[in-house]
Amino acid sequence: MTDFVEERSRIMGFAKLNSGRELLAMKTEIEYHLVAGGVATSCQTEATGNPQCMLYVTGVSAASIEIVASRLDNVFNEHIRYGGETTYQIECTDTEVVLDFATCASANLLVTGCIAITCM
Image (cartoon, rainbow, N blue to C red):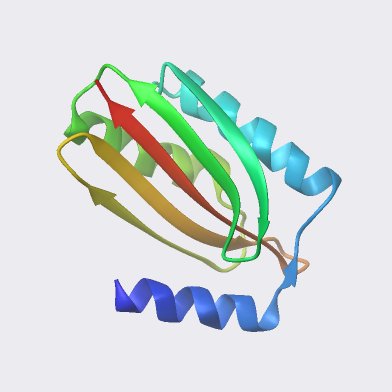
């Protein structure tokens, strides 16, 4: 966990916080890809205004923890993360898969967030 926190802090040190249309576009993209990629049956995203977690996504899934974690990792890397500097970590409990991330676009525009999927 310390490596993720240190790497996120490093990225946040040089990046500019993303806001406005780009953040709204990422919110829509996240929701679409989580459902289309089979990670969640439904989800919603809140723009928090907190630089440590700009987007907080919650969702539900009927799949197992292992399947959700694997799908979430794939969907994040293939469709959600920006092409620049990125760090993330996935943690699993008995009922939830949580992915925390910080990702930068090529123009050093930063988005941080948390995707929490509850497995039923």
